[in-house]
Length: 130
Image 1: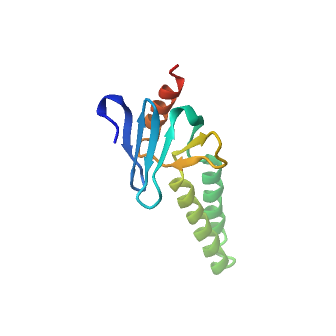
Image 2: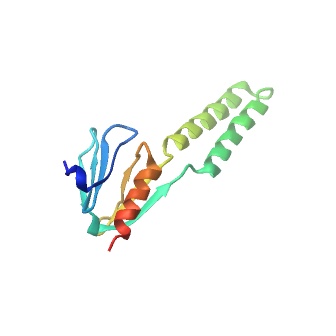
Image 3: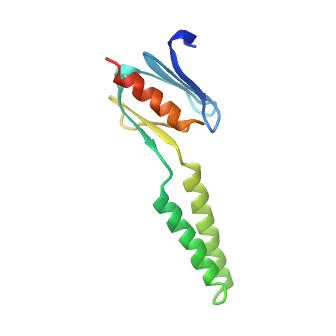
């Protein structure tokens, strides 16, 4: 664990675990996956994915179409409602995804901090330092 004096951000992940940002590294500790430590010098890009409103609207449109179709075919209408609700739930679950692109790696590190904006701001502050 890093010393408290060099810790810029230390917070929980929504699905369990912690993310710690220090002046020289980022530690992502997930209980169901292996822990990852990345030096700040190896970070290429950091992005914060907000909720995808287009998918939310489309998913709720499926629910509305299903509800409007109840008089024609109950099983088909129920299928549209279930598909729309499931899509809405999956879209909501993926909100606040923090993606950390690392030099030399093909896939970015993806995690879900409980306070995604504060974590993103801390990472941006560390990356902008000379």
